[in-house]
Figure 1 (cartoon, rainbow over the protein chains, first blue to last red):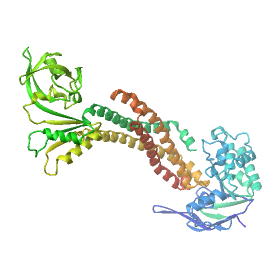
Figure 2: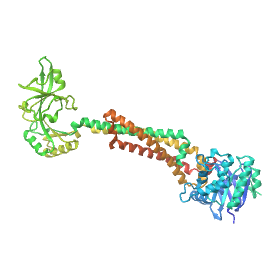
Figure 3: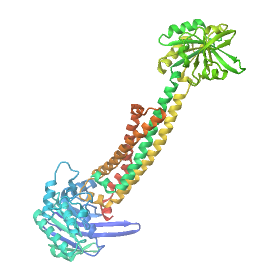
Figure 4: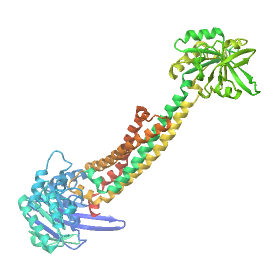
Length: 221
Length: 366
């Protein structure tokens, strides 16, 4: 069964008199252990689609399912809980908190949760992305590739089913991007998760199991 | 976490804390100044506050307090000294021709009413006279010199300290009560209680004993309803606290601004927190904690500074810096600190709420 499904999802933005259909009926699904890249020109609705899957935004029409459960009508708080337990995010510009060390940044999603201690998993994840010797470094002491690896470790701290990546290699040079993609692909298999990445990067497309092309809010295959 | 967030922009944090420090210092030191003034005023007015003054009432048959009434007062007031006095006025003339208009008080228990700069006030004034120091100075009188009043000669036994308390400075000439024997009645009876509260109680007892609703035989005045000094101090303290309050409001606005700025600046970051599943309540709590920490730091520094300022104020006003250690003044430090934390948290509520309820998508977009 697909871990994430979109059925006929429509997202309409209204700004003043202008009505923009960012998504015009998108059907999409992804399975565990699969890396799917979503490509398309800017303004095609890639980010909007990722926000739908990531439960950061709600569709105007259509259905979103995670692990077979309807989450379309979830309240803001329910969606937060879903993100907390099922989803991991990696952003183009890393979005690490500057005053926290690498380990603390990885622990961040569970930092407020006193019921679990994820320190050990955080250290383990950082070791697995090759940052075992950078645990107590703050982001400004790390290179771009290292920051993105910290971000990937952070996205996996809650043992998610789905990792969502928004231009994960966008701010990295070719070689660093390649190592990051190797890393992601390996972790995808180890953790048995679905990775959905949106990108312009042809390199990322090479690593993908499947490529979905989005043009003007519609999927072209 | 909140602590480190504050550490990120040290200058801004320091300025915000400075705002709170100023607010706290303003409210604390003004409060402590009031306490110091109050202590000083009470100690200066102490002679008056514990006195009850009795004179003939509006509906009295006589133009004074009778001997019988004095006896009755004595029987009612057993826990305080009762000092009946007769008063008159005269002009004293010195050998060198200098003249001085003085009020004449006939009293037996002179020691209860007068402090002397020289000589000793007798418990029972039988023959000599006491005269205020400045009048004696003017008339060139010295100890042992005779003073004539109503055909009687009195030897100067002591000099009354001038302005020993306001309202009583004009005692001027004090002679034995026998010297005013042509006056049948006492003009005033002063009762000296142990303190202001006892004086008020005595005043009320006398009032109910001698007077009814529409028949005032004796006019009983206590310091409490005589002078509005207490009320004045209250007003003063309120005004000072008002000024302190305004500065704290200004400080609160500064905190509001700082918290708002820092949440706007960190919008994207808060968006990330929300995206990775941090609950709205947790974001709210984080920012409120930052505000509370800011308030606590500012409050703590402000309290320490205020305490120093308070000691200086006490030293200047009452001449005793240790007065600042009293609870009456220390409590303003507690108020100041409490207010700093409360004001900070209150100022943090809006930015915190705004940050927590921002849409993560919008926030991430920046």
